[in-house]
Image 1 (cartoon, rainbow, N blue to C red):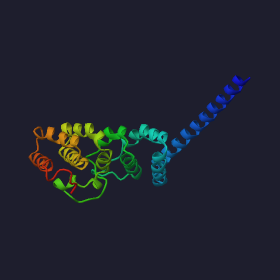
Image 2: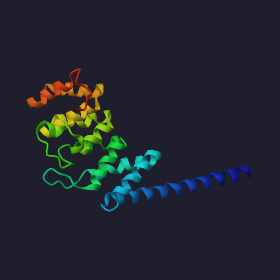
Image 3: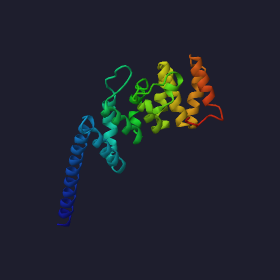
Image 4: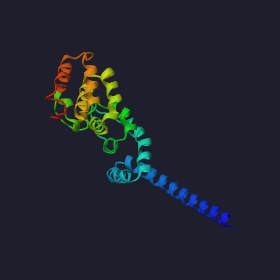
Length: 206
């Protein structure tokens, strides 16, 4: 009899856990849809940030789905205006979603702020490129993706990757820059790397 009671209790607990899990998935799916809609994206972004910081399963769900939201976006004259896309990118950075780093690295060429800066200064304002800022927030786990940009990116993409590594300011980031130095074809960028890996400049974000 006791065994039957124990089995019954375990079964009830399992059913309760399954219902809770199903409810959570439904809530996550709804929030993800709201994150993509212009009218609800700001509120959904705040809710995701609060939820993912307190609920590991919510963070895991977001990490599994956010890359697909960031992978495609309309770019007009180098600018991204999509509020929902920007919110998705910012969530990836603030929650340090390592899984999203490779997709973020693909967007180092776009501007997310209507800044009029040009030349090297174009790459050293991460507010002008939210994917770069998010990669810096993710930190060392984003270095493999940044190294890919250094090896295959455009001049602007490489410039921003260099600056992101400068902001990360870890031994691994410094090593990535030092390894790339001799392979950098642009003399301005090569000089920039040389300056920022010097003892006095390393780790300063200005």
